[in-house]
Length: 416
Image 1: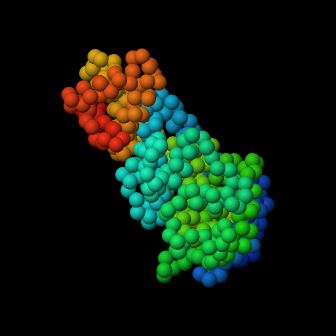
Image 2: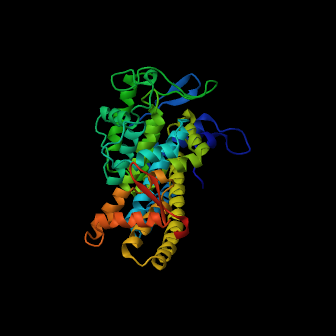
Image 3: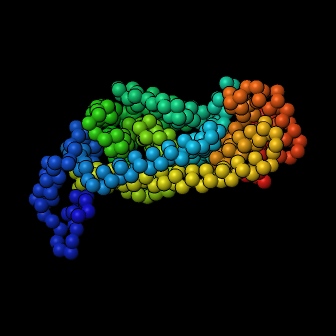
């Protein structure tokens, strides 16, 4: 039998609605079930537009569906790693940059924050530059990029949330939306539109801190499966909504970085694009879980968000396989077209970059290309030799200079 929300259980069927006593009995049965996890967290639940309650502990049932989705996500992650492992280094780097750019673009788009992939890609492409100008999104890009190096931010105390928030959204939050409490907001907010409130979170900093402390304890316990813990944390953070603005972007970053650390980087960097593709289901899952009639049961929420994560993984798998096949064909074409080993290497690296990047902004720069080849064989790929061959390939129309600072070339499509 398919697991139902209590709100659906109450009204389900062709006959009259179930009595309150029947719904209460079903709630108690779920709460005391062998496969139920009851937490010490008490989310704010919406009863009416101006009435909220928080006397139900957050719980979930480890359903077969959750177990199947957790296994599917783990298998998908292994598939992604298997495909990526066979790719050359520049292809992997370029694809990671592509996903990083998309992750930031879509998490902003979900919130209605205007950015372009070209704008983000320019910042991503200049990450290795020591003299990158202090521009918009640099801080966010660096924070997301840290997930690719395995760096994760441990949340052990309340101020850790604020540190991440400040780093992620530096320069993105207006003065009128900055936290007005010591660490978090200290005024009431609501989620929804000017005509309809969807959710009203805790109203001041003291209540926020009271809700966040059990969440920190939950995040740092090891008894609960990692994926389930990540999704529950995502719900609870958004339910608390500790800041005046930027909660959605912060919550998705926490989910993204955690998945990247526990699974693979590509899974972590495909979260927001997957959410954007099924945005209505994403918001519906929150609305249902925030509904007091469901009594803080987040079982269906976990199932829906896990489903979205697995869809994002499938997009990555399909895309990586297609690009991998295309790169194989490109390799043979380059081998047949060029006799000089240095020229072959240059064109092949630029081909990887072009195939696996979404736009030129995230493509490999000449300095990076030279470093890659020099590290592979410093005698064959001496810096001066590589630079001479780049000039010759440019003169012959094989590659084209697209940027001067930093110097960057793009391979002609006929060699892809």
